[in-house]
Length: 529
Ligand code: G4P
Image (cartoon, rainbow, N blue to C red; front, side, top):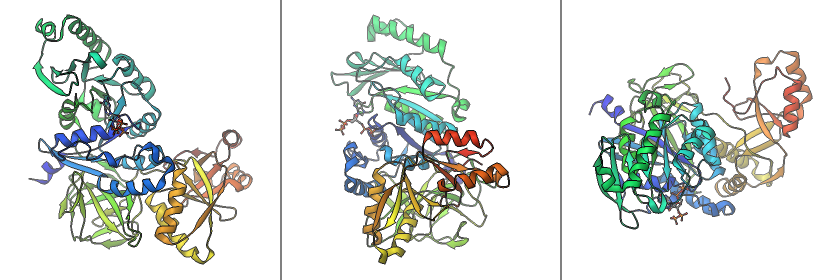
């Protein structure tokens, strides 16, 4: 198969949702369709359960499992599907944001009874900022839930989407009869009390055909006709270009657990979802079909075995092919590296591969060369944009609890930050180090890993920060900026990239600062240029 065909057949995407909406179940059903797994339950343990909030050892265990399921790949109707796993646990939200830099599209799963939830809002916002094409799957239709139109309204109002339903449920919960597929113009009916099987797929080009009444009953048929009329009246017809530009989001209804509507979703997905797209580097736009390899690290996974400190760096291939044993330029370090055992990922296992294509993810064994955002090329000094840091939610001073091990501590902190476990800020005033995390859980994870992987001990001390704001340094010579730096000295720090950060201790002080120094620009993400 030619290079261009290889690119065209790839679909690299992520599934995002609020925990418990059904992401894991849907992933599993997609894998079953792809023949990649044989039974349900196979990817379940990938999930960090809610109960794990107080049990970080469990998280460590699951972290090991999730290496294998970080990328789930399979072939469906000759398309190579790469699903990038995103942790549902909110303490790992930053991992998810980073993974979203490596996807070409996403499927958003929403629970029919709960509607749009907090994590959905945050994740969809990140996708919207990047114009990532999104398909919404409203799940758990076998249960009573919100009215379909209310849900569509919710998606528009709370998520700011412009939706267009491509399927529509016939009944819901107990009365659920099936799904009308607007995209394919047919009806899937489900049978039995458990409604586990698709009984029949009937083509219905014209839903006014009286046969519909015989099949689903007069009331349901009339409801469906009314609903579809409303759909056509209210929502713009599906437009593939609008979807690809992130301006319109098709919606499907179904039940992942019972397999309703999943095939329809997958069949439509492979047809409309984008193959690998061009990506903007700081220097230029890079197209997937360029001959030379370019790719970037979006995730680093530490080895579970503390005796071997090697890690797996996940590279998304943007252009060209990645070949085993070929030297590539590690742009940040300015040195050539060769990889004798690059891993490719399949359903639940990883294997050494000789060649990978744009859209694919390769896992490279790394002894500390990589950090998130690093670029590999065949010599061109390219830097990929788009892996910003967001303000952490929790901040603490980190202290060395074993003075004999300060070197180990420094190295450990350095490497854990490169992995993206947390963010490090060094205070301008006294050089003290502050760790910022998305969830309180990471502090325990860091302490545990420093001790077990680096033989270092740390302790924490509270540091009350409301938000970290990145400061635009372009005003460096401005008097107001100088005064801001002098007055706020106590609250200024450098992040790991050396960018200036203002650590506001309260919402009030943040507002006051913004009012007092209007020309000093503060940003809530590190990528504001
Ligand atoms: P997540 O990855 O988004 O966190 O969700 P997950 O798939 O684990 O699903 C959360 C719960 O919702 C699971 O139940 C799962 O079985 C259930 N679920 C998923 N899809 C459907 C659906 O279409 N209909 C119904 N009724 N339930 C669904 P659980 O009891 O929390 O877990 P488990 O014991 O089944 O593993």
